[in-house]
Image 1 (cartoon, rainbow, N blue to C red):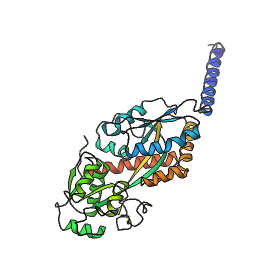
Image 2: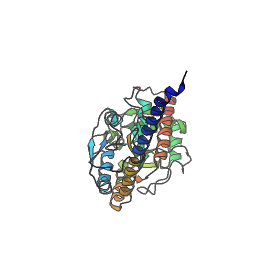
Image 3: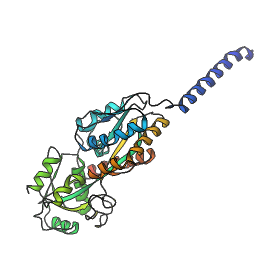
Image 4: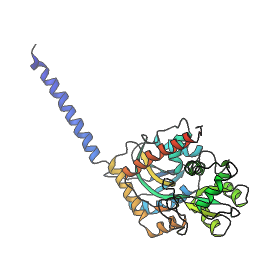
Length: 331
């Protein structure tokens, strides 16, 4: 057989492969060179007025300034944040549709049997924006003023103390279950429909305690309607410097912070990710933005995409273990 007859065809295939590969490499290397050339949509998977919405709207003016294009907040709430999140998972990976997530993002894989997206593989991490620690608060009538006193009080009354939460599978619910497991105590869960009624029931004395986001209980604690025993950040929050952490109080593994993160659809080119991240860091460096975050009880982070990915994976596994140990079935 004369192999020389096949040489022109093989040469053409090789040449086309080289050209195609070069074109793809060139496109990838120049991805985002004219980005952005239109407005960006920032999906908030919650209704307007909540913490994720407030933080997002605090960031967008400065992000728009840095990008040279408007960043528009688009509220797509519902189904525990999964509707808006699924929308971004299916969006084009061109940097024009972004997503802001909170603590529910890493809890949902443990609580929802069939999510309409993969929390790790369907998204490209950009950065952790900020974090808000949880706090343990009790009704002032309880004869305890420290975490150690409370644990001793609860151990002497197994199953007699009620704790409220904004609902089954929320950060408040699972934080209390984690605390109960680590402290070796038994409490009764009383779920409510939202954070406000859960806190009101504690202030009225109908239930004895709850885990809640630190910003939501600072004012009531200072006014004597609640007593804050411990906060669940790694270090003391600037918003409540007089309240010790669980770490300081002898529970080093009880760190619960809701982290707000910025994501893009999977496959978003790294140059675009970096461009958006730089815009976010520009916003987080602004004194006015920082003041708003601190007023809300949030502390800025500004991580790398790699750090955000590590956090997401570890938190998903953590809350899956908590639900397994507490025998909480996903819905």
